[in-house]
Image 1 (cartoon, rainbow, N blue to C red):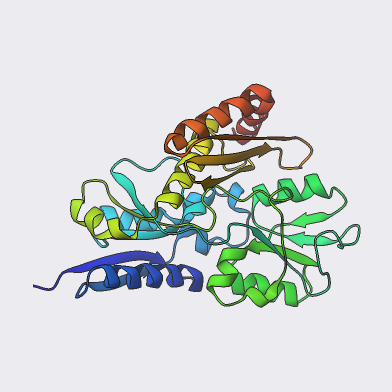
Image 2 (tube, rainbow, N blue to C red):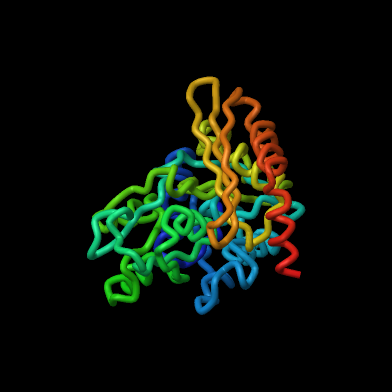
Length: 310
């Protein structure tokens, strides 16, 4: 009997690229394995007229995929890790992280060569609270506006003149062969990446030993340690979908450096710090950095943001 595996994925071109990439890696690791994609449209894909933060946050991109796992319509789900909430539903597990691609944010514009050269009052588009916070902090003179839709839709809106510039993930543009649109890679000092950015992760039912075994050869240890630190940081902060939070870890040998940020949506208040420690203690580093920011005043900011949602 031929062994097979079903992959739940969103239907966007980038999501399908990621799922096909995982499928190819699985076929290489397990010759003869039959891999089937199970594409679906998520609530996050359907709601395009409002900011994500106002309709439930980035978890809207994965709920339907997780339900397919629960219903046994799929064996694994492939995600952009920046779309995965810090807390997983009961019975779900993240079992593999692929090698991290370029985690930086990309500045894309048809008229301006860099973020610094944008004129005062320029209109810049992004769907991310994290990016809006940091862009406003760096350049309070700019107008930030919500930009939703897949990568191609966002590029079309820029070409139509709706924005002077837009910010996208560099990894997504490169995976789609659209990196010629990148005018500048934003330094992390300007735009610290999202937790899990540029990492493709695989989720399955925590009880599914077969799926775990199939995915084990795809796991990259560096990416796993970095994303563990970043997700522990975000989890300890207990931020809401209205909370601009960034976290980015880099492993160098036996050590890991984690930088984290919490800010107000208007960019006026930003708490930022970094820690370096043993790579094997990645989750502890994430918790420790979160505690440091909370003690510095981020606790009051996050409490106020949670209160605004009530």
